[in-house]
Length: 461
Ligand code: NAI
Image 1 (tube, rainbow, N blue to C red):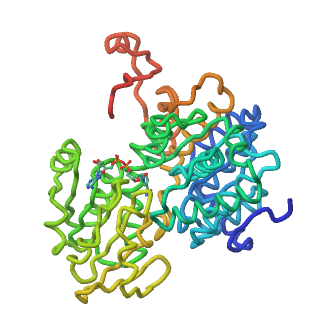
Image 2 (image 1 turned 30 degrees about the vertical axis):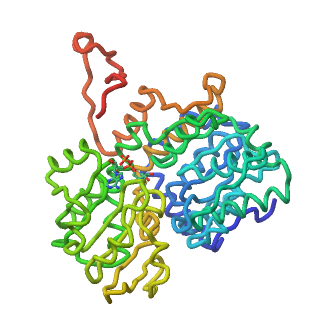
Image 3 (image 1 turned 90 degrees about the vertical axis):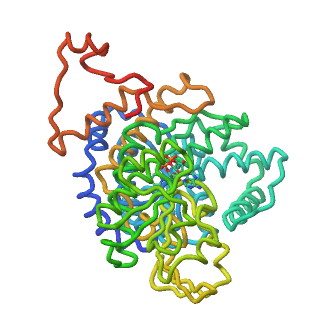
């Protein structure tokens, strides 16, 4: 179909292609998979719907899936994260993509709907945060007679409206889509929580691979990725001097660890809040002061949520913050900060994805990306190299679901450790890492094979 895409400006394709060429040099895992499987095309016959930030790195992922034989259609999983030149390059290359930086919530669900429109429908989902899976499964349950709950957020209003629209246009469509999907691979912590929840409720109708919990994903992208991209986002948004400022990081999981390290690396004095005693102890022993948010409100300059939880920064917190405090979120969804409660305040837009909000006291807040993940809204997300590790897991997961589908039940799986180690191995040469080799006796002594896996399943890294 001609022009089967929605991008900001197709003329940005040349710029996108140049950046893609550079990114490829930093994504050795994906390029190695092209080399290994480009001829045998294990994904031939697969039709993959992707719902994941439409960045330059994702463009390399998409072109890898295509090189391995997949038919692909793509939408972004966030209204602010698209890099328009990346989307243009993918569209110009002939893969349908529906993503514009700054699209509305209504467009978000409409574009996701469009990404399902293969002539024969898709058979695999590649998800980030679970929106594509939610769209199909919620729609199918509504078709099956379930009622929508009362919408409590703009997001829910938008998805319900889109589902109703699709049901009117094509009765039975969601059920048909659900029944032909062979599996989903999920990128992030929040989406993985949703999948385990579906299993608990007996509502997961196909196998899922939890890519997030590959060691070479969450212990790298979530941590080292945020270490680079958090401060990048704050700087591009505000140009504020980071050194000497007091920053509070809420949550000390993988993203929190990277975020706290990012701010410390820039010279900020970093405090951490946690609810989990293990993570709180880790933060303290990494040298961070672990505090209650309430006790840091009037003294901190920068507040960053990393929890994947909701209502972490609430309106009563924002009322106590000092003038020109910077407030942002790097977790997946925008409900970590009670942005809706700020809507009746005076907003002054400074530039795209940066707003100044006047509080009743007269103090102003700088809110980044309207509370959506700021490293992708205000900057360009994680660097290519770390995304190569994440996306190599994604491609391996899609290959598993496509070529070995019968081996999986309708549960959530993690890729086997030998593949996790393979992903790491593929990234060593690029940064000059020399790997030592176990001899047979040493391997026997610690009870592993000289070629790995090198750790038992329960090892935590
Ligand atoms: P995690 O589960 O490792 O860490 C979250 C931490 O937040 C936990 O230690 C938990 O105890 C803590 N927490 C929960 N509620 C809290 C509260 N009210 N106050 C203080 N701490 C609280 O999860 P992970 O992998 O760090 O992911 C966090 C979020 O970031 C998820 O939404 C995930 O999808 C997203 N993510 C974002 C990325 C980005 O590039 N922006 C990259 C990877 C993940």
